[in-house]
Image 1: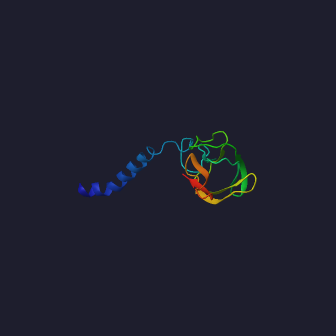
Image 2: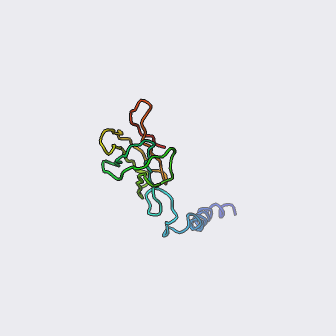
Image 3: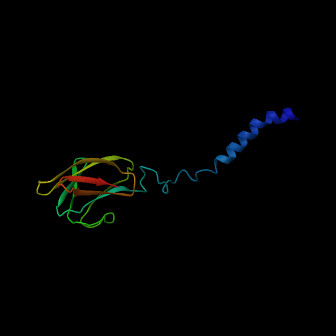
Length: 137
């Protein structure tokens, strides 16, 4: 009896494995609710804003994407008026961001960040000594 049970055990394990496979992960043909990086159902972005009086050209990966035209005393909502919003479906990618006042007198040095949330916030500031800096949340 024990020998028959041992011989049939691999077959029993295989049957249980095959039957159990259909119970994990749901439908593989519809991935619309998948929230991982790089799918078409979700955007990953950044809102760029400032607390200074300057009108600022914003550059992502070397290309101008917009102009910050409004000052905020605290972090605004994503995509607020006067801010610059950049998004992509390729979450997890690394971008570089920099700024330059419209008159060309102030330049914010390039800073790298990863788009790994629905909306990151980046603030262009001037430090107490007047030097421009970029703060990334």
